[in-house]
Length: 112
Image 1 (cartoon, rainbow, N blue to C red):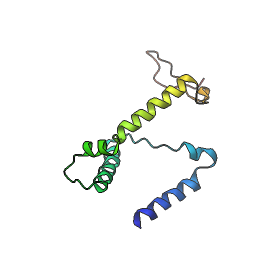
Image 2 (cartoon, rainbow, N blue to C red):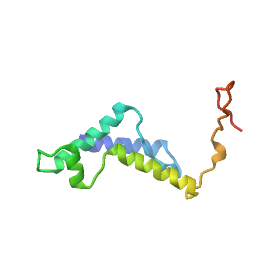
Image 3 (cartoon, rainbow, N blue to C red):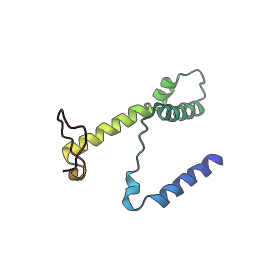
Image 4 (tube, rainbow, N blue to C red):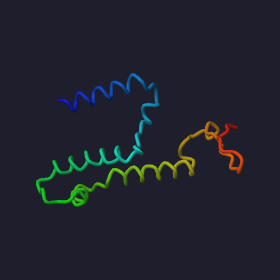
């Protein structure tokens, strides 16, 4: 009940703050080690709850359910996105990104 309420509050916040088709592209990739470990801990617990064999290690449970670690899935997803960008499968306007000029004197990013 508490988890469902929390999830509904989060979805409501997303619905109120993000408009249009931007909602489709919501993807959170944590970069802080504490956040990565927290999410992985949730998957560890979920795989432990789903199996009757309490003696299996986390990686054995992942193999049993055909899963990989969350970090591996995030890395794979990122690589797929880079591939799609290079191959032109995603319609991205690269003119909106800042251009970095590498010189010995400049340390700032300039928009061109």
